[in-house]
Length: 215
Image (cartoon, rainbow, N blue to C red; front, top):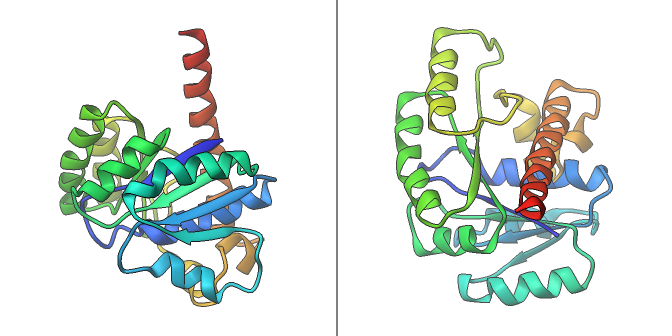
């Protein structure tokens, strides 16, 4: 079972939207997916309540229950679990980091988000967890100095997954309709981005698992 946490200190980086769209892309790729909501705001839980399909299990819980829930999900055949967390360097985020194999750290391409990743990175290194950055909410015209600066800064701090995720209306519309972007507009640019991001995430997880077997 692959376990992923979406973590960052900076609010507004798009953690919940990323968790949702990545989960739907993974489900469409044949995974048995569960989304876990650790954020007291409950945006992910609300999405699950509004969703017409029951193909993705969505549950809210507290950090102390995470180990037991993970064991139960594995017993019941889940293959991918994605944990959404609140912003900030909190005990909640620490619990999610401890309970998962890979942490995705979303950041918008500006100096404030990139700088805020520093605290999250320190936490990940202390807890010895694998991580990768996702540059999120980028302007659709990718090759600008601001985007390149964000790429360079995050690449210098650690792994940066591809693709860069653009700021597109499909993400907001999919959230409004309790869908993922790959369901809303399967042939759109946002859908293509999210499928590629899932492939990159899966490859990162598989690489980590392979290293663990060799060790």
